[in-house]
Length: 267
Image (cartoon, rainbow, N blue to C red; front, top):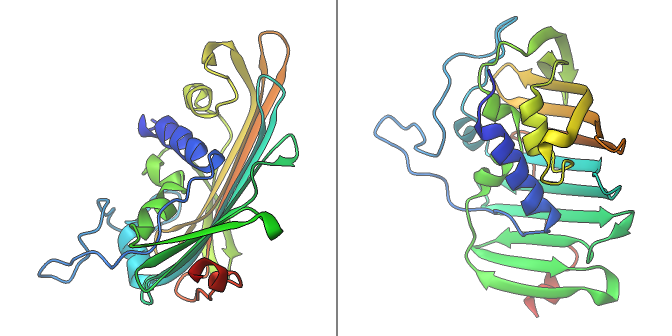
């Protein structure tokens, strides 16, 4: 059975990214209790992946322990009005150095929406670049927000938890790590209708005609890669579609360099 949180998470992420919001950046590590365990968000799921059972461990704890990581996320789709939307997000974090870099882009019908938004965080200061080339504008401010909230929210698999509908499909290698592959081909139609944004507020008018979802889980219980896509048809015959992709790479080996535009933001 699917979590009722999933459609809300999908919509929230799409709204956040399509609007080119800055997102979360580096903050100091969460406090620990007397046992040394992180008190950061999310309840841990005991045990690692094991054969046929889809199971995820607490990403907050695992990523804090790793110290650094890179996340990429993308969405592309055609809605009920025939509008093509594409959003990408690149996100690198070095928790030990308290640095992060984020780049968000979006297009509508192939045309950029106000240019890219970039953020760099270092030494407790957030630097922002909006736009491209000579049209770019810069700003900076003291402080930063929690880095892991954004990275974790971009992974939809975390919302599923242990889900019997995801089927074990073998092992493979991703980003140098051995991973277990889980697949889902029978869509929970309510999930897609509520979360895709393709239905334009009229989910009852959308017939889902195809759906595929793949999750790759490493031996620590982290979702390392997710790809899912659907296509459908509205009552009037309009074809709609959507595809998402999420990757978690460079776990424990990501470094965050200063962007070339940092001097302009500091000026």
